[in-house]
Image (cartoon, rainbow, N blue to C red):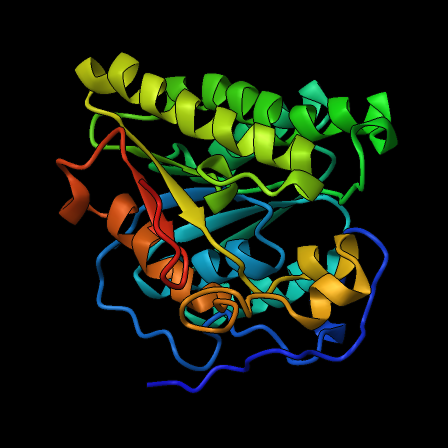
Length: 285
């Protein structure tokens, strides 16, 4: 078993959206450890927010399981190129799709570009997210509230709607929620509210798409060591990040990836409408 780092972590605040290559310790996205077994052979996956963190870990896992991957990201070009390098090292194709998902046209464009390149979408992972921390409700600017919902919820809706005509029976949609959907952190109020919406959207969409044979699930990570943490949280929060979990540490992105593989693969053929926690022992009820 890997011995992953525990807090305290050194101060390392970064500007949004963060650079994984500058984090210390470096997040483990499975670059050296994840081993595939052909569970997603020849599938086509579109993953948002896949330049780093959980998205990169999922992209690497999917590639090593046999999938070609389209990587949507904001503007973290060096991180995205590193993700592509690992996908291609696994012998799979990688399409990089930079752009702001808060823009409706970009949501449509990433789907169209993926289909133009690969012909279809078998697995859609809505993982991109924006968050910031605030001390009081009055500290939350209207534009931050709107941006958080645009990127985290409205983009998910738009991408699902655009992708569905290109998804056949047996396809899978996986949305990244959060432990905040069950136990909201008040300092992350806009983000936590969107994560509750994602869990609800997922449960409803699964029922709506059941007759088409398309499965929809969400994953609810707890504290995971990613660039989002060092670019949006206070120095004290970063220092102690993950220390309050029963396992006493944050999770690593590679530890979240396997549930995405299960939900994307044919082995998950009767799993739909569910929310899966990866929380280091914090219950989701």
